[in-house]
Amino acid sequence: MFDNLPEDLPRLETLRVWHTLWLTRINAKIAAVLQRQAETEHGRRHLPEPPDWTVELGIGAGRPPVQVHAGDCHMAGKRRRPVGRDEARRLLADGLRPCTHCRPDTQLDIPGLPRGTTPAFPHRPLPQGHRRDEHSPATAPASGRRP
Image (cartoon, rainbow, N blue to C red; front, side, top):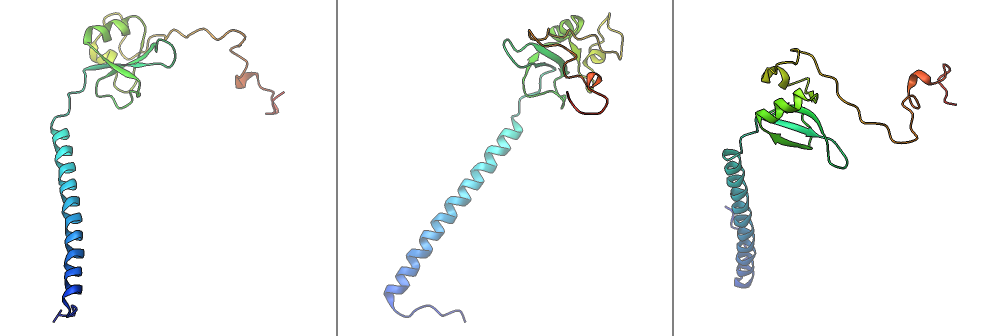
């Protein structure tokens, strides 16, 4: 039925070599896919536990802390470090902003912080020569055009 192979020996041997090479490539690819799947599954089973609390870090020299988050909060930025319960409580008590999504201030039940409110965040001073109202829309001309 499917006997449309050539009749001469040299062409049959060439076909056998060609198919052997393809079978070797296919087997190598199968082995690579199985290895990748095994590594992915191993990684999934051995994920480290998320920290209980994290602090989101700012940009610049010293990377000052910006916000406190629960360890599994999806709103924490990429620049963060894990902190313990005591340090998270200390940072919040010192006036660092709690995340408004995961509410670590409520979860930690910090005495002295009213529940459900955000403490004032100390703003950094503006660079020399900049005025706070320079780019404010409140000081723009009423016509919508800039001076």
